[in-house]
Length: 371
Image 1 (cartoon, rainbow, N blue to C red):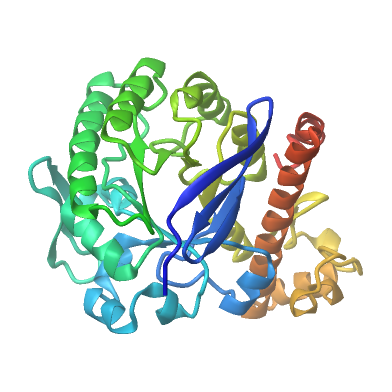
Image 2 (cartoon, helix red, strand yellow; image 1 turned 45 degrees about the horizontal axis):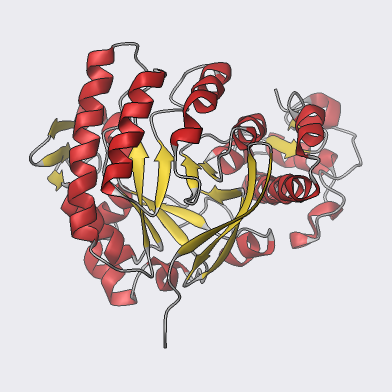
Protein backbone atom coordinates (compact mmCIF):
# COMPACT_ATOMS: atom_id res chain seq x y z
CA UNK A 1 0.00 0.00 0.00
CA UNK A 2 1.35 3.44 -0.94
CA UNK A 3 1.95 5.66 2.06
CA UNK A 4 1.06 9.35 2.09
CA UNK A 5 3.95 11.78 2.23
CA UNK A 6 4.06 14.22 5.13
CA UNK A 7 3.00 17.75 4.17
CA UNK A 8 1.61 20.97 5.61
CA UNK A 9 -0.91 23.30 4.01
CA UNK A 10 -1.48 26.83 5.28
CA UNK A 11 -5.12 27.53 4.47
CA UNK A 12 -5.64 31.08 5.73
CA UNK A 13 -4.53 33.61 8.31
CA UNK A 14 -6.38 36.01 10.59
CA UNK A 15 -3.55 38.49 11.16
CA UNK A 16 -0.86 36.19 12.61
CA UNK A 17 -3.24 33.38 13.65
CA UNK A 18 -2.97 30.50 11.15
CA UNK A 19 -5.44 27.88 9.97
CA UNK A 20 -3.87 24.86 8.34
CA UNK A 21 -3.67 21.13 8.06
CA UNK A 22 -0.91 18.57 8.45
CA UNK A 23 -1.19 15.51 6.21
CA UNK A 24 0.32 12.24 7.47
CA UNK A 25 0.03 8.56 6.58
CA UNK A 26 -2.12 8.12 9.68
CA UNK A 27 -4.52 10.94 8.97
CA UNK A 28 -5.01 14.70 8.75
CA UNK A 29 -4.33 17.03 11.67
CA UNK A 30 -6.25 20.29 11.55
CA UNK A 31 -4.28 23.17 13.00
CA UNK A 32 -4.12 24.87 15.44
CA UNK A 33 -4.08 21.48 17.17
CA UNK A 34 -3.75 20.27 20.74
CA UNK A 35 -2.02 16.96 21.48
CA UNK A 36 -2.91 15.11 24.71
CA UNK A 37 0.20 13.63 26.30
CA UNK A 38 0.55 9.85 26.38
CA UNK A 39 4.04 9.65 27.89
CA UNK A 40 3.98 5.91 28.62
CA UNK A 41 1.77 4.97 25.68
CA UNK A 42 -1.40 5.98 27.49
CA UNK A 43 -3.22 9.24 28.12
CA UNK A 44 -3.62 8.81 31.87
CA UNK A 45 -7.01 7.58 33.01
CA UNK A 46 -8.74 7.80 29.62
CA UNK A 47 -9.66 4.95 27.25
CA UNK A 48 -8.19 5.20 23.75
CA UNK A 49 -11.61 4.96 22.08
CA UNK A 50 -12.83 7.87 24.19
CA UNK A 51 -9.83 10.01 23.25
CA UNK A 52 -10.78 9.51 19.59
CA UNK A 53 -14.39 10.51 20.35
CA UNK A 54 -13.20 13.83 21.80
CA UNK A 55 -11.98 14.79 18.33
CA UNK A 56 -8.32 14.35 19.21
CA UNK A 57 -6.34 13.93 15.97
CA UNK A 58 -2.83 13.30 17.35
CA UNK A 59 -1.26 12.32 20.66
CA UNK A 60 2.26 12.61 22.04
CA UNK A 61 4.51 9.83 23.34
CA UNK A 62 7.92 10.05 25.01
CA UNK A 63 11.12 8.51 23.73
CA UNK A 64 13.00 8.31 27.04
CA UNK A 65 10.19 6.64 28.97
CA UNK A 66 9.22 4.22 26.19
CA UNK A 67 12.90 3.25 25.78
CA UNK A 68 12.98 2.24 29.45
CA UNK A 69 9.70 0.37 29.26
CA UNK A 70 8.41 -1.51 27.38
CA UNK A 71 11.64 -1.11 25.39
CA UNK A 72 12.53 -1.17 21.72
CA UNK A 73 12.14 -4.93 21.21
CA UNK A 74 8.55 -5.02 22.44
CA UNK A 75 7.64 -1.99 20.34
CA UNK A 76 9.23 -3.56 17.25
CA UNK A 77 7.33 -6.80 17.88
CA UNK A 78 4.05 -4.90 17.68
CA UNK A 79 5.14 -2.77 14.75
CA UNK A 80 5.19 0.37 16.86
CA UNK A 81 3.15 2.26 19.41
CA UNK A 82 0.02 2.61 17.24
CA UNK A 83 -0.64 -1.13 17.33
CA UNK A 84 0.66 -1.55 20.89
CA UNK A 85 -1.87 0.92 22.34
CA UNK A 86 -4.58 0.53 19.66
CA UNK A 87 -4.33 4.10 18.37
CA UNK A 88 -4.74 4.44 14.60
CA UNK A 89 -4.09 8.18 14.29
CA UNK A 90 -0.85 10.19 14.17
CA UNK A 91 1.71 10.13 16.99
CA UNK A 92 4.39 12.72 17.73
CA UNK A 93 7.24 11.70 20.01
CA UNK A 94 9.34 13.95 22.20
CA UNK A 95 13.01 13.07 21.81
CA UNK A 96 13.97 12.81 25.46
CA UNK A 97 15.28 16.37 25.47
CA UNK A 98 12.81 17.46 28.13
CA UNK A 99 14.05 14.69 30.43
CA UNK A 100 17.56 16.11 30.10
CA UNK A 101 16.14 19.08 32.02
CA UNK A 102 13.55 17.42 34.26
CA UNK A 103 15.93 14.61 35.29
CA UNK A 104 19.04 16.80 35.32
CA UNK A 105 20.27 15.26 38.59
CA UNK A 106 20.35 11.87 36.85
CA UNK A 107 22.20 12.80 33.66
CA UNK A 108 25.12 14.65 32.19
CA UNK A 109 25.66 16.01 28.70
CA UNK A 110 28.54 15.24 26.40
CA UNK A 111 28.08 16.99 23.04
CA UNK A 112 29.99 14.20 21.26
CA UNK A 113 28.17 11.32 22.96
CA UNK A 114 24.73 12.59 23.94
CA UNK A 115 22.88 12.55 27.25
CA UNK A 116 24.19 9.99 29.72
CA UNK A 117 21.40 9.01 32.11
CA UNK A 118 21.22 7.03 35.30
CA UNK A 119 17.82 5.37 34.94
CA UNK A 120 15.26 6.69 37.40
CA UNK A 121 13.81 3.15 37.51
CA UNK A 122 16.80 0.94 38.33
CA UNK A 123 19.91 3.12 38.18
CA UNK A 124 21.28 1.53 35.00
CA UNK A 125 23.40 3.66 32.67
CA UNK A 126 21.56 4.79 29.54
CA UNK A 127 23.18 6.70 26.70
CA UNK A 128 20.67 8.69 24.69
CA UNK A 129 22.56 10.04 21.69
CA UNK A 130 20.87 11.93 18.85
CA UNK A 131 21.15 8.77 16.77
CA UNK A 132 19.71 6.56 19.54
CA UNK A 133 16.79 8.93 20.06
CA UNK A 134 15.87 8.72 16.37
CA UNK A 135 16.28 4.92 16.40
CA UNK A 136 13.89 4.64 19.36
CA UNK A 137 11.39 6.98 17.70
CA UNK A 138 11.53 4.83 14.56
CA UNK A 139 10.84 1.74 16.70
CA UNK A 140 7.87 3.61 18.16
CA UNK A 141 6.94 4.26 14.49
CA UNK A 142 6.19 7.92 15.18
CA UNK A 143 4.68 10.03 12.45
CA UNK A 144 6.44 13.16 13.71
CA UNK A 145 9.87 12.76 15.29
CA UNK A 146 11.73 15.41 17.29
CA UNK A 147 15.46 16.01 17.25
CA UNK A 148 17.33 15.43 20.49
CA UNK A 149 18.04 18.82 22.04
CA UNK A 150 19.27 20.35 25.26
CA UNK A 151 16.39 22.08 27.03
CA UNK A 152 17.96 24.30 29.72
CA UNK A 153 16.19 25.34 32.89
CA UNK A 154 14.88 28.89 33.15
CA UNK A 155 17.90 31.18 33.27
CA UNK A 156 19.07 34.66 32.31
CA UNK A 157 22.62 33.41 31.80
CA UNK A 158 23.35 33.86 28.09
CA UNK A 159 26.41 31.58 28.29
CA UNK A 160 24.24 28.66 29.40
CA UNK A 161 21.66 29.39 26.70
CA UNK A 162 24.32 29.81 23.98
CA UNK A 163 25.88 26.49 24.98
CA UNK A 164 22.45 24.82 24.71
CA UNK A 165 22.03 26.25 21.20
CA UNK A 166 25.42 24.85 20.21
CA UNK A 167 24.52 21.39 21.56
CA UNK A 168 21.01 21.46 20.06
CA UNK A 169 22.29 22.55 16.64
CA UNK A 170 24.96 19.83 16.54
CA UNK A 171 22.50 17.19 17.72
CA UNK A 172 19.93 18.48 15.22
CA UNK A 173 22.38 17.83 12.36
CA UNK A 174 23.11 14.33 13.63
CA UNK A 175 19.41 13.61 14.17
CA UNK A 176 18.66 14.55 10.57
CA UNK A 177 21.40 12.28 9.22
CA UNK A 178 20.04 9.37 11.28
CA UNK A 179 16.46 10.18 10.25
CA UNK A 180 17.34 9.75 6.59
CA UNK A 181 14.98 10.51 3.72
CA UNK A 182 11.62 9.00 4.72
CA UNK A 183 9.10 11.40 3.17
CA UNK A 184 6.18 9.66 4.88
CA UNK A 185 7.37 10.90 8.28
CA UNK A 186 8.52 14.26 9.58
CA UNK A 187 11.47 15.47 11.64
CA UNK A 188 11.09 18.71 13.59
CA UNK A 189 13.95 20.93 14.75
CA UNK A 190 13.80 22.62 18.16
CA UNK A 191 14.82 26.24 18.72
CA UNK A 192 16.34 27.30 22.02
CA UNK A 193 17.52 30.68 23.33
CA UNK A 194 15.42 31.27 26.42
CA UNK A 195 13.81 34.70 26.59
CA UNK A 196 16.45 36.47 24.49
CA UNK A 197 15.37 37.61 21.03
CA UNK A 198 18.87 37.54 19.55
CA UNK A 199 19.59 34.00 20.77
CA UNK A 200 16.22 32.70 19.57
CA UNK A 201 16.77 34.14 16.10
CA UNK A 202 20.30 32.72 16.04
CA UNK A 203 18.97 29.26 16.92
CA UNK A 204 16.14 29.47 14.35
CA UNK A 205 18.54 30.54 11.59
CA UNK A 206 20.86 27.62 12.32
CA UNK A 207 17.93 25.19 12.19
CA UNK A 208 16.70 26.62 8.90
CA UNK A 209 20.13 25.97 7.42
CA UNK A 210 19.74 22.27 8.33
CA UNK A 211 16.14 22.24 6.96
CA UNK A 212 13.44 20.40 8.88
CA UNK A 213 9.84 19.42 8.16
CA UNK A 214 8.59 21.52 11.08
CA UNK A 215 9.98 23.76 13.80
CA UNK A 216 9.38 23.80 17.53
CA UNK A 217 9.97 26.40 20.19
CA UNK A 218 11.63 24.61 23.09
CA UNK A 219 12.80 25.90 26.45
CA UNK A 220 9.56 27.80 27.11
CA UNK A 221 6.80 26.98 29.62
CA UNK A 222 9.63 26.18 32.06
CA UNK A 223 8.62 28.64 34.78
CA UNK A 224 8.67 32.03 33.07
CA UNK A 225 5.68 34.37 33.22
CA UNK A 226 3.11 33.92 30.46
CA UNK A 227 3.72 37.52 29.38
CA UNK A 228 7.43 36.75 28.90
CA UNK A 229 6.68 33.65 26.84
CA UNK A 230 4.23 35.51 24.60
CA UNK A 231 6.64 38.43 24.23
CA UNK A 232 9.45 36.20 22.91
CA UNK A 233 7.01 34.46 20.56
CA UNK A 234 5.86 37.83 19.26
CA UNK A 235 9.47 38.83 18.59
CA UNK A 236 10.65 35.62 16.94
CA UNK A 237 7.90 33.36 15.52
CA UNK A 238 7.84 35.18 12.18
CA UNK A 239 11.47 34.14 11.67
CA UNK A 240 10.23 30.53 11.36
CA UNK A 241 9.38 29.30 7.84
CA UNK A 242 5.83 30.22 6.91
CA UNK A 243 5.25 26.97 5.01
CA UNK A 244 6.14 24.61 7.88
CA UNK A 245 4.24 23.70 11.09
CA UNK A 246 5.17 25.66 14.21
CA UNK A 247 5.01 23.85 17.54
CA UNK A 248 5.18 25.35 21.05
CA UNK A 249 6.34 22.53 23.31
CA UNK A 250 4.73 21.96 26.72
CA UNK A 251 2.60 25.11 26.91
CA UNK A 252 -1.00 24.26 27.47
CA UNK A 253 -3.32 26.42 29.54
CA UNK A 254 -6.20 27.68 27.41
CA UNK A 255 -4.89 31.25 27.78
CA UNK A 256 -1.36 30.08 26.77
CA UNK A 257 -2.85 28.52 23.66
CA UNK A 258 -4.92 31.59 22.77
CA UNK A 259 -1.93 33.89 23.16
CA UNK A 260 0.39 31.63 21.17
CA UNK A 261 -2.14 31.09 18.35
CA UNK A 262 -2.37 34.88 18.14
CA UNK A 263 1.40 34.90 17.49
CA UNK A 264 1.24 32.21 14.78
CA UNK A 265 1.77 28.87 16.59
CA UNK A 266 0.09 25.77 15.11
CA UNK A 267 0.66 22.90 17.57
CA UNK A 268 0.50 22.42 21.33
CA UNK A 269 0.88 19.68 23.93
CA UNK A 270 0.49 19.60 27.69
CA UNK A 271 -0.23 17.18 30.52
CA UNK A 272 -2.57 19.74 32.09
CA UNK A 273 -5.97 18.27 31.07
CA UNK A 274 -5.31 14.91 32.74
CA UNK A 275 -3.06 16.16 35.55
CA UNK A 276 -5.77 18.65 36.50
CA UNK A 277 -8.39 15.93 36.19
CA UNK A 278 -6.58 13.90 38.83
CA UNK A 279 -6.75 16.82 41.26
CA UNK A 280 -10.42 17.66 40.71
CA UNK A 281 -9.83 20.69 38.47
CA UNK A 282 -12.16 20.89 35.46
CA UNK A 283 -11.88 23.08 32.37
CA UNK A 284 -15.25 24.33 31.12
CA UNK A 285 -16.71 27.22 29.17
CA UNK A 286 -17.43 28.77 32.59
CA UNK A 287 -13.69 28.76 33.27
CA UNK A 288 -11.65 26.56 35.61
CA UNK A 289 -13.71 24.83 38.29
CA UNK A 290 -12.23 23.30 41.43
CA UNK A 291 -14.76 20.55 42.03
CA UNK A 292 -13.38 19.88 45.49
CA UNK A 293 -15.01 23.12 46.55
CA UNK A 294 -18.02 22.69 48.85
CA UNK A 295 -20.07 25.10 46.71
CA UNK A 296 -20.51 22.25 44.21
CA UNK A 297 -21.89 19.84 46.80
CA UNK A 298 -25.49 20.47 45.71
CA UNK A 299 -24.88 21.67 42.14
CA UNK A 300 -27.10 19.64 39.81
CA UNK A 301 -25.65 21.02 36.56
CA UNK A 302 -23.22 19.05 34.34
CA UNK A 303 -19.70 20.17 33.46
CA UNK A 304 -20.52 20.29 29.76
CA UNK A 305 -24.11 19.84 28.62
CA UNK A 306 -22.94 19.30 25.02
CA UNK A 307 -20.77 16.26 25.72
CA UNK A 308 -22.25 12.81 25.05
CA UNK A 309 -19.02 10.84 25.52
CA UNK A 310 -19.49 8.31 28.32
CA UNK A 311 -22.74 10.23 29.02
CA UNK A 312 -20.61 12.90 30.71
CA UNK A 313 -23.44 15.41 30.63
CA UNK A 314 -25.49 13.10 32.85
CA UNK A 315 -23.04 13.47 35.75
CA UNK A 316 -23.70 16.46 37.99
CA UNK A 317 -21.05 18.59 39.61
CA UNK A 318 -22.52 17.44 42.89
CA UNK A 319 -21.83 13.80 42.02
CA UNK A 320 -18.28 14.60 40.93
CA UNK A 321 -17.72 16.53 44.15
CA UNK A 322 -18.90 13.43 46.05
CA UNK A 323 -16.57 11.11 44.10
CA UNK A 324 -13.59 13.36 44.82
CA UNK A 325 -14.33 13.50 48.53
CA UNK A 326 -14.86 9.72 48.58
CA UNK A 327 -11.47 9.32 46.86
CA UNK A 328 -13.02 7.33 44.02
CA UNK A 329 -10.86 6.89 40.90
CA UNK A 330 -13.90 7.47 38.68
CA UNK A 331 -13.67 11.17 39.57
CA UNK A 332 -10.27 11.61 37.96
CA UNK A 333 -11.30 9.52 34.94
CA UNK A 334 -14.45 11.53 34.25
CA UNK A 335 -12.86 14.93 34.84
CA UNK A 336 -9.80 14.05 32.72
CA UNK A 337 -12.08 12.98 29.87
CA UNK A 338 -14.10 16.16 30.26
CA UNK A 339 -10.93 18.23 30.13
CA UNK A 340 -9.64 16.60 26.94
CA UNK A 341 -13.07 17.00 25.36
CA UNK A 342 -13.13 20.68 26.36
CA UNK A 343 -9.65 21.29 24.96
CA UNK A 344 -10.65 19.81 21.61
CA UNK A 345 -13.88 21.85 21.62
CA UNK A 346 -11.75 24.90 22.38
CA UNK A 347 -9.40 24.16 19.46
CA UNK A 348 -12.35 23.69 17.08
CA UNK A 349 -13.71 27.09 18.11
CA UNK A 350 -10.28 28.65 17.57
CA UNK A 351 -10.08 27.13 14.08
CA UNK A 352 -13.62 28.21 13.23
CA UNK A 353 -12.96 31.77 14.34
CA UNK A 354 -9.71 32.00 12.35
CA UNK A 355 -11.62 30.75 9.31
CA UNK A 356 -14.37 33.34 9.82
CA UNK A 357 -11.89 36.14 10.51
CA UNK A 358 -13.23 36.64 14.06
CA UNK A 359 -10.33 35.20 16.04
CA UNK A 360 -9.43 38.52 17.69
CA UNK A 361 -12.91 38.81 19.18
CA UNK A 362 -12.79 35.20 20.39
CA UNK A 363 -9.37 35.92 21.90
CA UNK A 364 -10.61 39.00 23.77
CA UNK A 365 -13.73 37.19 25.00
CA UNK A 366 -11.79 34.22 26.43
CA UNK A 367 -8.23 35.29 27.23
CA UNK A 368 -8.91 36.01 30.92
CA UNK A 369 -11.50 33.30 31.52
CA UNK A 370 -9.01 30.63 32.64
CA UNK A 371 -6.66 32.63 34.88
